[in-house]
Amino acid sequence: MARTNPNDPGAGGVSAFIVDATSPGISLGKPDRKMGQQGVHTCDVIFEDCRVPAANLIGLKEGQGFKTAMKVLDKGRIHIAAACVGVAQRILDDALAYALERRQFGQPIAEFQLVQAMLADSRMEIYAAQCMVIDAARRRDDGESVTTEASCCKLFASEMCGRVADRAVQIFGGSGYVADHGIERFYRDVRLFRLYEGTSQIQQLVIARNMIREAQR
Image 1 (tube, rainbow, N blue to C red):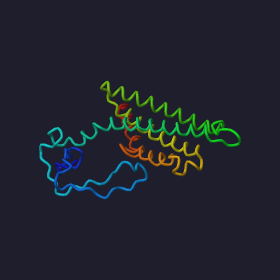
Image 2: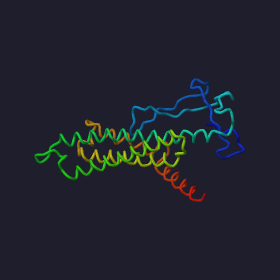
Image 3: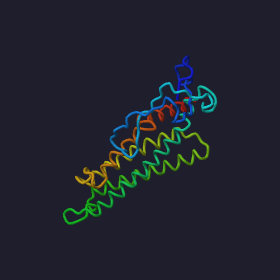
Image 4: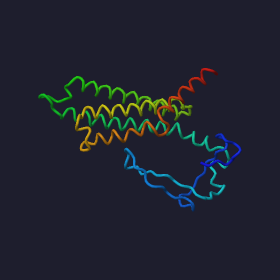
């Protein structure tokens, strides 16, 4: 993205380009040290006197950069929501297996009602998020505008995944806090879901503003 019209301080002054990674003037910053998702290597991409041919302008029309970015957000948010459902299901599977294996007071901890409540709440929320994702994806495939639905999916599923991970650590007890069982890694990894493709707070704004706009038509 680059501002191609300095006289337009808004979104209309921004254009999107395809930039070859081998172009002179591109360098990579120091790798980020992150809380989780260590398998995904990230860093700053630095552009310094990097010249990009006009032919690399996406859509061959200036001022469409913001619109180009917005086009992929709905799909990206549904994708993140789907990933949250998958990860949450894996976490719940591990928590259930541990609850059936771990014994306290002569019985598996899965027999304790408060542990059952955490398992049940997780299953319920995963199912709800899964239904939301399927519905939003079908609507998008049918050509409908799903900006609100995509934000709803991303908001609910990412927050849900965090709650499932938190419950799993609780079910594992002290073992969930150490690295041997892998649950603490999930706990750290899924925290990012509530941040990228728009934070939970951004999703709330998108949903509410769309509601207000529709009500005022």
